[in-house]
Image (cartoon, rainbow, N blue to C red; front, top):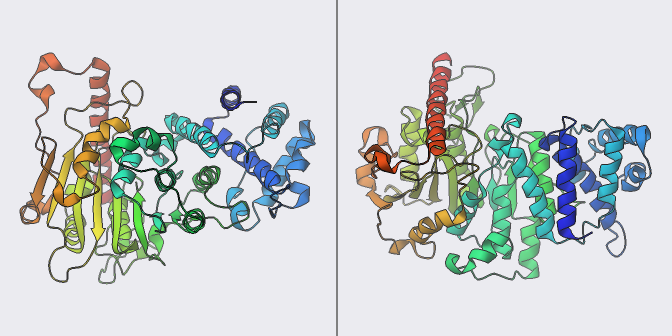
Length: 499
């Protein structure tokens, strides 16, 4: 079977299962279990002869030789047993459950996977197939999976601006399905269609890693956290299908709350889109704070301020993760730029402690989680003693007079071409102002009310020229997003009053 036929077959079977109430998320999980077992079986054969640590009575051969009810019973038993194993095996099958309750369809899925040699398939093909299913799952708003899926053009633009180098460590404390790691891997290896097509204007010579660099990339580069077991599973499989990690190795993604403890290692890069949402029920306190509202309170002596705002806590945590000279790019909602109280104190400390050099104001209509207004904040960790590290912040406005939707006008990497050019990754000292790219000195920012970093200067054309309005469906979507953003903010206020 050729690649295109296989992809078509996998997609069609997903649609068949949806008729039985099995959504993309459930299908992805079952596909993950079976794909992992099949690939572990293939790696155990000549010429690889690698140990999978899968008990023989629960390996791929034990599944493919059964049909009907005996297959379903054995499959359930296999999931339970493998979930108690160590290493990557236990991580993939953690809390695994069978969601395909029609034995005939389960048998068809097993046979479909068995017919194909997966380790011999091109990595890009396997990865693109799985990524496509992840995106479909994110589009299913009822599943809530959109919160774990960052738009890939945003991730690609961030990676292009960061100019990642080999043999450096990269972390994401809320890694979702692994989008940042995959784009970073593609940048470092020169793979990925987005990079090949845009290599000329990205000024990226497609690299060739030596064996030492390649081994470091596979086994030591990436460090992540994902607290949701099912999402962590999808992330691990996504990375595995893209050549990151080993079938018999240890998982590089911890199933733990990144905010609960101080990081035990420092990293060179942090790329992250921490979860949006209402304030956490857990309040993080620092050494000096007297705040202790519940038994769920976590003390972080390395934090600047105590707050129950998840995004502010993630921002403080990310700073604590960076080596001296380490670099970060973090997607953060607008409220992080203007919120008072702890927000103001954290912003002032961030500007003093780090070099906050660039803020990209993202457009609306690009996230699967509705009502999100967000920015990408780029900063470097450095220390100049008593002087503030931030000398000034460059802002790029990709929001004003920009109209995107999730279906009819989707965000593309080309839409970020001008931003990446203005960012000038090769030499930030040679930046030049444009209509959408402006520079604000530290001295001017720090005296703003509450050190407010939420700055905009472009006029909204739709407010002045009613003859040049966007199409009705775009206006409708923007109105919905504005209302949802307002509700989002009110819920934050409500949560704060109750705490």
